[in-house]
Length: 313
Image (cartoon, rainbow, N blue to C red):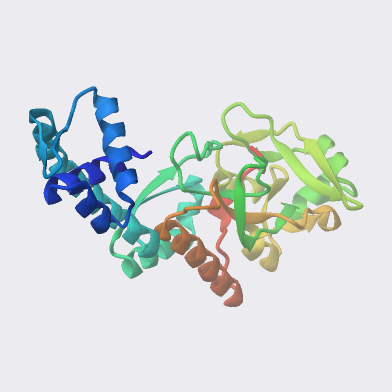
């Protein structure tokens, strides 16, 4: 039996001065009311009521319990109301984890529009490049690029991310254009990697995943400086097409290995629970999905050159 049910039953008996009156008020049988009070008395090891054939009155211990439990039950009932409201109306704090590079995309403006629409929601934005344990660190939604390796995570695909291998025409002329991803091992590569991780570039070879571990001439924790270096004929980069589209269009960079690029790469929203998610979290997921679809329809990229990152890093 739940402690709150026991205490509520006890208080109803005290208010009405009878077990039968409490039973009618609570829509319970009188034996069940007696059972609840007896369970509470056994739990505390004291007698709570003086019982006669005509009257039920509180003992000193019962009076103390009655006085002390009133504010507690009021607080519990108030909290229950607030929790029920949060399950229906978006409110409370949301914690969202995202790579810092996503802050140079339309994402911050999207989050701002969400908060404007839902003024009762507050946001804690955790910016990190490491893989966050959503449950352990209390993160509601984790934004990531690429596949989500943790099978316990539920993901919602937000927008596709296409990747490109590119270098300047001068670099390709000096070193040759590779015909297979493994030939990149003989090229100067400019790669992004976190901490001391070894950069791995991912491809698809006849429908099968292919991972190439490159030995970069330059390795950086962010791809932004690599975009400058590649234009100085220093090597080959691997990053989202949105990062390179302007340079590919004007011919300062040329793509290679297009037939080997992975096709199923997405910006994902990952979360840990299916049931009992708050209304704020459900609304945020729906909002992000709708907004990214709108941007795709307008041919605007969510993932820009600032968001380029080594997949699975």
